[in-house]
Image 1 (cartoon, one colour):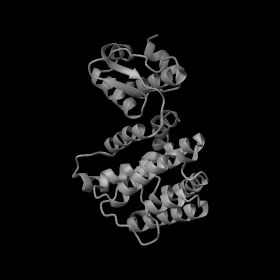
Image 2 (cartoon, rainbow, N blue to C red; image 1 turned 90 degrees about the vertical axis):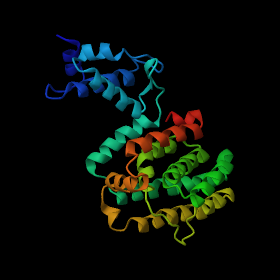
Image 3 (cartoon, rainbow, N blue to C red; image 1 turned 30 degrees about the vertical axis):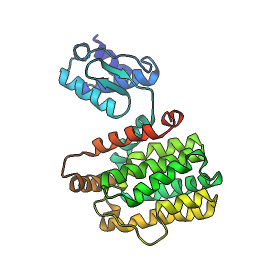
Image 4 (cartoon, one colour; image 1 turned 120 degrees about the vertical axis):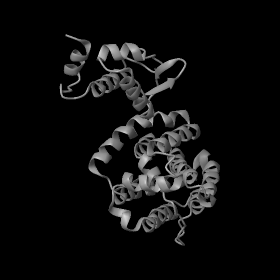
Length: 278
């Protein structure tokens, strides 16, 4: 019995699934089980292609997918290495689930309202902690920026850093898991602030003052204002809406996957090491 047949039975895939799917599940399982720890160098493309009876192009595609999901770091000169686990693995799995269920803009707004309103209030409990000045800098960039892609990524960094201000790793992990969808919501071509007291800089000042109730109110107003940006798109799948807006913003030069990858790269540069790994 071949290795690929053994793996097919071992990981519960069916013979009808293509070999690329089998390869991807096998590699994920070895990484998740710890058989291949962080820093482990994977077999080369030729060896994987021979073992799973697939083309090297199929192997390359699987490796690139795992890299986007955060499992691997690929160096053209050195090969593919297992990454330290970070939030991309969790967000990748959740994104697939939300995609299958056609999560709408409304769904994401409601989830963010429950999560981010409480995070903002709790961050005010310690006046934003050590990250308050960084939050203020990010708030100014979001509120005054004109580049839509940069605004979207900076907005994600702002709300993610709020979790660090709370100091609760569970809340950090929960927000990290929906990070792509937080990002997708801000990919709007036309964006103007409504006069609702929902500017990021106002939220920061309430946090700095230690006013938890005002921080929660402003956070909720901030999210309520976003509803006005979407109009008839509010009950459409968020990825569909985001893809359409991104094509207008970038002229078709970026994909959602490109934006997510760039966002996580910048997010990892902002967050402390302990917060990247949840």
